[in-house]
Image (cartoon, rainbow, N blue to C red; front, side, top):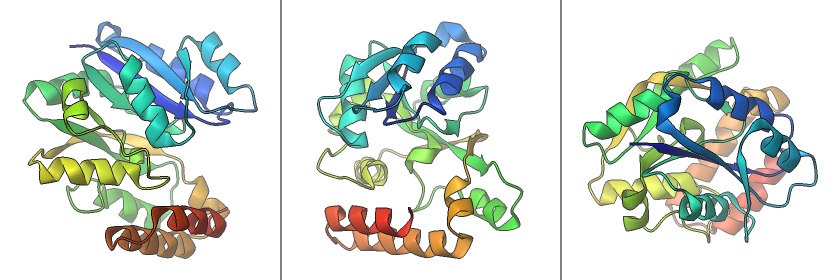
Length: 230
């Protein structure tokens, strides 16, 4: 029961080195098979920093998180896949947490999270990530599952430029694969809220989420989302 950590990157030189070193310092290194950084053509020093820190760097044939994560999954040598964003800090117990969760015959799981902020409003947001409901399963919650299960579900939809993580979890749930939430919490950057405003981010997220559920073009949604939350 070993784990392949898969980190999609695009110009993440500020985060990737620290993220890799964090994983290499976690307890139960016997469970960590490899760290795969799947890069989509970074123009900064992401690749060099990742290689120096100890990761194996893969060049994705297509740009986009879904394509990058699928490419990493194809190259992964361990039976368990763990998808992590470069700027999300998993709990130090994550390797053991993952193996224990999947040993209990769960199909897939993720972590609740805190924000790296003292904002009371963001503490409320984080509280909701501890429950299994429609809006859970996003990439900040760092999804993990067996590789065999990942491919049975068809991997991430590479046609989606946005919401690929939610789409995957919703498809899994339709197949009766319950999402197991781990009590240990990751730490997520609050920079989106700090750069914009709490209310603006909440409104944009809600509109994006519901519009995607109602079948609105994900490509138009992605353009609108990036325009609104620069």
